[in-house]
Amino acid sequence: MKKITFCIPSKNNLRYLKTCIPSIRENAYRDDHEIFVFVDADEDDTVEWCADNVKKYNFTYDINPRLGVDLYGIGKAYDFCIENSTTDIFMIFHADMMLGKHADLKAYEHLKRKSVVCSTRIEPPIHPNAGEKILEDFGMWPEDFKHSEFDEFVTARLEDDKVTNGIFAPWMMYKDEFLKIGGHDYMFRSAREDSDVFNRLSLAGFEFIQPWNSLVYHLTGRGGQFQHGKVTQEHNQKSEEWQQLMNNSTRDFIRKWGSQVQHTDLMLPIVQPKYDIGFVAYNCNLEMLRVLEPWCSKIYLDYGSDYMGEYKRQEQANTDYNLDERVYMYGNSKISDLHDVCVEFDCAKFQQHHFNVIANLSSILKDSGEIGELELDIFKFYINSLKTYEKDYIVCDK
Image (cartoon, rainbow, N blue to C red):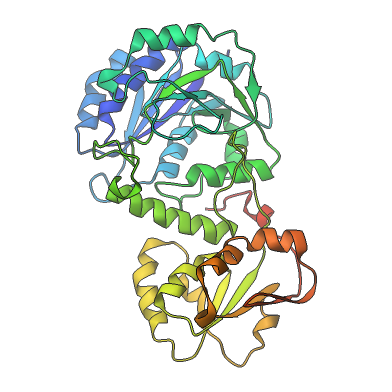
C-alpha cells in the first residue's frame, strides 16, 4: 500500500495519545506512515510529551499559535494536518482510538477515486449500536485497555469480507479530492464538522465504504463529552463545555442545511433539500425566537418586538452567522414575495406538536409542496419556487 498520513487533533488528550500513537506504530501494515498531531489545547503537558517522544514514535506535531487563549477548532486542526502532510492519502483519526492490526491496509484495499473508506469501530457499551459498529468491552480507559484480547479479536476477523456503506471516523481519502471541496467548514469548531463534510462529499458523488476487517478500538467521546473524566449516559452530566459547543454547532448545522443531522442506521448520510424559507411569526417572544430562528433563512417579527435585540445580544457570540441579516421586523413589503417559500403563523397558537412541522419543512416541501398557497394547521405557506440550494454548499469557500 501507499504511505498515508494519520491526522490527529488533540485538545488536552495526552492520556489517550499515549496509547493511540503507539498503536499505530505497532499495528499498521506499514511502519513508516506519517503521523501528524495538532495540539489545540494543552492543560495536561501534551506539548512536553510530544517533544520528548517525537523521535521514539517518529511523528510530527504542531501547536495552536494561540495556545491557551482560544481554540483553533477541530476542523481547522484536521485541515492543517492534511494540508501540511507529505502523502497523497490521509486518514482522519481520533486521539481516543487505537488502531487494530493492519487496519490501514484493509481500508486502503477498498480506496479508489471518488471514495471515502472508514474503518469499523469497536466500542465499549456506552452508546447504542444500530448495526454500524461492534460493541465489545476491551477497556473503558486507556490504562485499562486489554491489548492482547483486542489483538486476538481483530486477528480473527482479518479475512472478514463484509462491506457496508456508511461513514464515521476514522476515514481515509485522497488529499487532492478533499482539498478540492474546500476541506472542513471552520464554522463548526468542536462538533458537527464531520456531519457537514459528509453531507458535502455525498452531494459531490463520493462513495462511502466501510470494510469490517479494518478495525479500531474507540473509547468514544473522550475529547469532548467525557473529557472531565466521568463516563455517563446522562446528557446533562456530560462536560458543560461539550454541551455548549455541541448546542452551538447543532444550531449552525440547522442554519446551514435546514435540517438536523440525518443518516441511515449504517451511518450513510441523508441530505435533505435546502429551500429558501422565510418565517413571518406574529406574537413571538424571546424563547420562541430562540427555537425558530435557526430553521429559516430569515424571520420577520411584529414591530415593537423589543426582545429581538436581546436575542441578538445573547446568541451572536455563539454563531458566525450575522443575526442582523437573519432577524427582522416586518415592514410594508409583501413578505410572501421575499422568499421562495414563506411560512406565516401566529406564535400565540403554537404548541409542542407544531414544532414537528418546523423541523420537517424540507421533507414536507419535498413530498407535497406545490407552487401556490397551502394551509397546514396554524401555518400558511406561500410557495413561489421549490428551487433547492444544498449543492451550493459542496465547496466550502473560506
